[in-house]
Length: 120
Image (cartoon, rainbow, N blue to C red; front, side):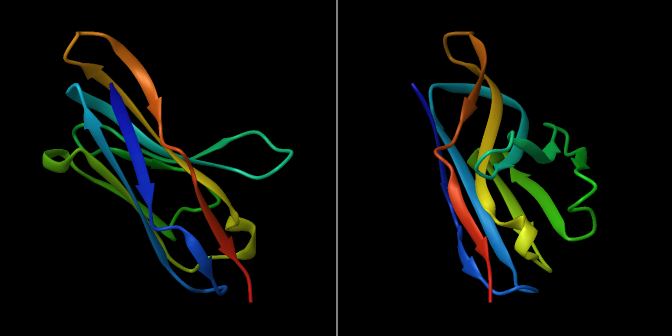
């Protein structure tokens, strides 16, 4: 079994910052790419940022220069530092990991989602 547990969401004023964390645990052999996605009601889930096992990153245009994705491979954890938050960043944020289990199966796993609300 593999679990991804997210933390760090909450309510923040426009211009503020939040840091999301997502820790993967269980029968993990290796983790390839990790990502953060977000979803608002009535819209498709969108990719916010991705990071490969060697640290290469990509960002959605809407968050470039404001968000930073990073990972600690020793802790199987991915982070999303969100600065200069805007009301349009309000969403449920999900982490995703493409990993190989100790049973040598390869698949995508998802966190449970954490709410981020940007409002004054």
